Length: 424
Image (cartoon, rainbow, N blue to C red):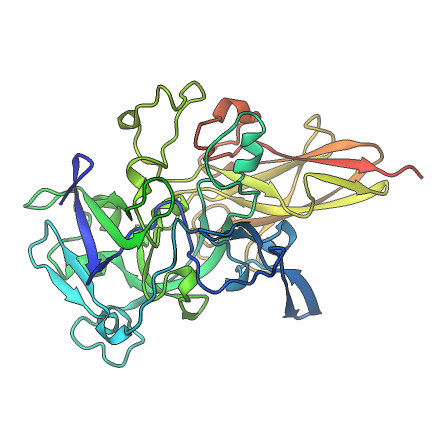
């Protein structure tokens, strides 16, 4: 199949074609929202019962929502109810799972159709393929995370995300490389005897955004056939079958890259998730001059405080998350309690009670975020700032203006919150 001037692979099931999820990580379906767009859920932890707000609705149709900041970091593994919702159109309904088929076609030697039972190792019916279930803990982040802050510099186009278009979940499914081997595509392939440099995933879901049409996206073939990339055809999230919000019955998970690549439904990859310089505007844009974005840059966000806060003088504890794409670890997180004049290093952690190391060792989750915490004394009005450095020495830019782009994606500038001290 030839798409946008390049040859791609298609993964298709019946009349519904599956996409590698461009830009979004989840879909619509049953939502946890009430009339005003907010609802609380009761969460029971070791320390007792805790009321947490589930999600904040940003758009009703298509449905887009994110959890509040404090809710987001209440758990290292994000509960399904708190995972951000991203849609470009209505959620498709699978009426009969027995008739569900995943078609692998295009520039392949042995096109075939697979039932969900063929792909799902949990199924008692899986006999022909014997594809093992692989489990990965991976953070998914929408490319538009923190778009609202970028729009304060200059107007941008897209959903007005705050800082919570991100989540960390345990994904279970078949490795894409194992599925592609069934049709004759070997590991670490850059091309095939028929050509083809990408694997494309297409959806039957019709987008309400732009001019409609199916949502579709692709990833390079060399990435899809690399076992170390851990690309999954996922059917589980946090140990349970995917629900309709998150791609039931099957979705693609591409760890370490923008959520646009782990799409449930695809189309935007050709014309949307590309990083342009600040001087490019809608009147002079040339989409062909930029490659689609893959890895997300290093990012850190303060979640224990809102944009503007009031507190008594004394010690303030700052908590948040940090993450980098491509499987790169977080070398450190620096926090300033005086608007960047001086800095202190925050403690980093993933698994409870286990020190975090940014190198790729058995104790660290390669594709997952890092949570951080640090305390500092404040006595007057101030700005608290966070910035991170990843294991490749990549740093966050100080100023959002230097990375402004018309789509409002990849806002990884220093995260700043204001703190007003009450007079004693």
